Image 1 (cartoon, rainbow, N blue to C red):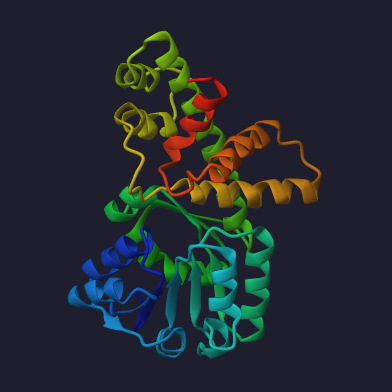
Image 2 (image 1 turned 180 degrees about the horizontal axis):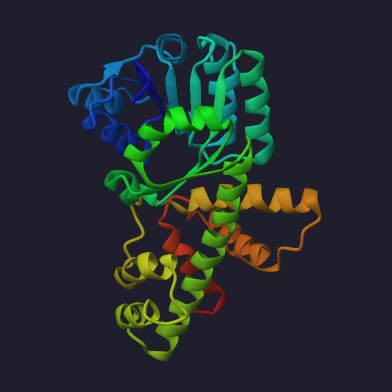
Length: 294
């Protein structure tokens, strides 16, 4: 990897296994997270601990971020003690967070002011893909910066594609998240129908995955729904609630019709409003069941 030292900010359900894969590949890695326990685990695996975001920014020439929401992301990237203000010119900053298109473009503009290279590079594949190093990584930004970061990105992802200039990676992720939300709710609706007519969900999942009705969300949600194991998930409903909000706001600004997106949003917001946000995304079946009187 061309960088002499890499940094990773954000060691949650996705960031932690991504950082571990970098370490396992021999990367000289500095890590930062508000959770000292998460940092301690990575230090035990060979990482160096950073005392602050400023420490990461000023000591690394390739910096990865995986943050939970746009507010946090903007603060970490553009704040006074943030990455852009404290990074050395020429540093490559790679944001794996799922944010709005506007946020990614603002980040790119601010990075340019500080002579920092910025890649928006959101990911898909869930905690399982992050652990296995098989993530899809959708990248927007300068081609030379992408080429420099690519060896590290390919440690974390099996499908690493540059879609164009800054914003293109985020745009691709939002397209993906629209489909993820719709497919998740559609799978829940199908499983509710299966329960109503007495079809075993596990058998249904197996058949659907061999038929036109199958999808990644059918495959992952089927067993979870069958077992009703919605607690302690690395893919909580709150993430889709956040993402569909970003997608629908963008659609409204662009005056795009989103009929299935709106239907999925209605179910996700119903889940949020009834206290289901921390449950697995497969728990979208619960508001559907309630509407069905089940």
